[in-house]
Amino acid sequence: MTNKIILAGFGGQGILFLGKKLAVSGMDKGLNVTWLPSYGPEQRGGTCNCSVILSDNDISSPIIGNPDILVAFNIQSYEKFMPRISSGGILFADSTLIDKRPERDDIKSYFIPATQIANDIGMPKLVNVVMLGYFIKNTDIFTADYIRSAITDSLPASKAELREANGRAFDLGYGYNG
Amino acid sequence: MAKVLIKGNEAVAEAAIRSGCRYYFGYPITPQTEIAEYMAKKMPKVGGLCLQAESEVAAINMVYGAAASGVRVMTSSSSPGISLKSEGVSYIVGCDLPCVILNVQRGGPGLGGIQPSQSDYYQATKALGHGDMQLFVLAPSSVQEMAQLTADAFGIADKYRMPVLLLADGALGQMMEPVDFDMLHFTPEPEKPWAVNGHGGKRKKNIITSLFLKPEELEANVLERDKKYKTVNENEVRYESYMCDDADIIIVSFGITARISKAAVNDAREKGIKAGLLRPVTLSPFPSEILKKLSDTASAFLSVELNMGQMVNDVKLAVECKKPVYFYGRTGGSLMSSADVLDQIEKIAGGLK
Image 1: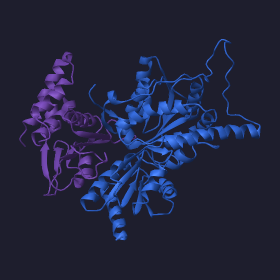
Image 2: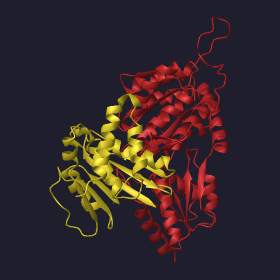
Image 3: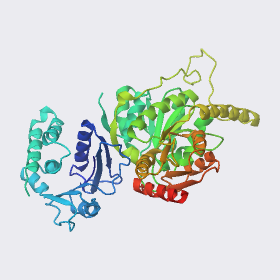
Image 4: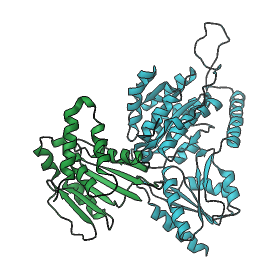
């Protein structure tokens, strides 16, 4: 089993963090993992992406040509990476910011208004956690309980309100039926 | 301790600190700046010093001074910055001082790009500085190995009193992989009676210099150092041999491309092509002997590199024209896929039939 995942969007949307969460969760499960960020003259508001590979085999290259899964948080990332999803792959996209739909019938598409949902609960920064919940619901890489507690447990007990908010964002994404 | 997910650059910094390195001098450049960032955070906590110099030239000369005083010291940079350090590196060699230098390679020449590359192979193995000199060059191919080879580098540098260069690339530096730091083994720091570190007039003074104006003195100095290089070449060669014993086609590749090539070897085996991988871990000394030996049983060699063909010439020298040596590479910051390497293997296999 090998999953090649590209996560892409604007700097500041928590994309590198989301990718790292997936990679650490894979490592803790005993999988081989790599995490590679786009690097260079990056800036908040500019585009950013990271490549995460989870595998029970050796990982040869951390660079992903054709992802099995794309998680797109803006239209630029959608246009850049959607055509590269391998046949039979999966697209996750934030429909608040992406108004296009793929003209491909060889991939599965999941759209969620993640930005809208995060805004509605007054936590716009948790757009990545909303998306994570939706991602976990529609893939079988990790169980919901495992990832949900990985997210909330990474916050100190003194930040109980943030734990609660992250859990809620995750649940909203997980429970979303588009 | 359990495994941690960590960038290659940070793994080098952590392993250096655990190796007893207490002095780091550097100057920022992508894609290796995380090392300075990590050192700046951690060095003060262990009583060490992380100093951002005014330039790469200054940083390497601070390494020169610190090494002369007998402490474990390192610097790091990326391709254009390494070029700037070359004068200082030559002085350090000329004074027989131990230190560790890391090159997280990016594309060149000139400012080039910032994406992964192996195009400094010639510079690293042939002439990172003027004069009759040789560096010890190690090439990691995973983040765990970035950490272990850093630990090894300090031991080797002290043992032979020579600079050790770690030759990595942007992909290895930037990627995160699990690392188990408890698995690392370290070489204790030896006594350094040659160091210039102040003695209150209690012993004869030590002099460290690379200046020998009399030709016969300089020749004797170079000849003496050459004995050391011979010992290194005889005793310190390291490589990983993967499915080479019965292989018809042997890929020679180091660092990140060795991993890609290994996947291609597995794919080729599934297609019934007997491929193997010889991965040099030391680029200098180069594993010539094993390649020479393998040229008796293999039918062809393929050097896979992120440049226009540099290590391939060392493979040719090792194989002594007994078997054809092919080259496949990408450059400028692009990487090949394992499917690309498999294509090359299949082409060679087709020609052999």
